[in-house]
Length: 301
Image (tube, rainbow, N blue to C red):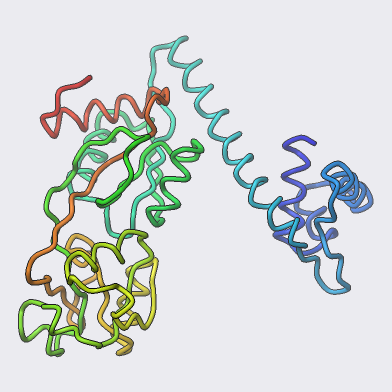
């Protein structure tokens, strides 16, 4: 199988129809149908359930889809970085993309300023930001799908290089402005009691809350989880519960309806830029990292 067959497969999954996928991929319907049967024969498993109304995936198809997406994403990254390397060697010009995946709300002002300054110096470098949780960011880094991650500690940096973007970000709750939490100005373990909470999907939050409160995380009343701050605001505003987050996140969404209240005693976290150790970064990323280090007063390695 080749990358073309993977793209055909993903198009069929997206469109839910051989006919619509064939039109989208500019291939005849019989040819695409043969390609899908050939692909299933090659992997040795049925991938598609060919229903009368819509094509869906078998369990094997779901697994295959995940790998197909990752392989095509890696191919795109490979093509981009090879072009960057060739162009730089031929002309000395730095261009291309810098792919940054950050925890929701974790993009700091210093990072934003660095990107703006870099764009003023070199508009041929494009910065692509996406949001994800810490587990997926680590996975994307190690698979080479993104160049950098922006994460809050704790985060496993055993296979990463890192620099600190922001120190001692306060953890607390995103709450309604007319709530008892907001009136107190801080939140203690006793204040929370068994009141409902909305918890981020960050994998280390249960341990952080347990360390802060000295009680098992299971004893907290987690009413819902979120992976988007705007989802958190919606849930808080609807009265589902108060949302656990850190202050840098909350600043991006606080308005007349919701506000941030810090924990007492305080619980803080550092926000870091991380990248895969020993990875040969493309010239665009090396230039960006050099600029960011200089901005933060960190000696360039």
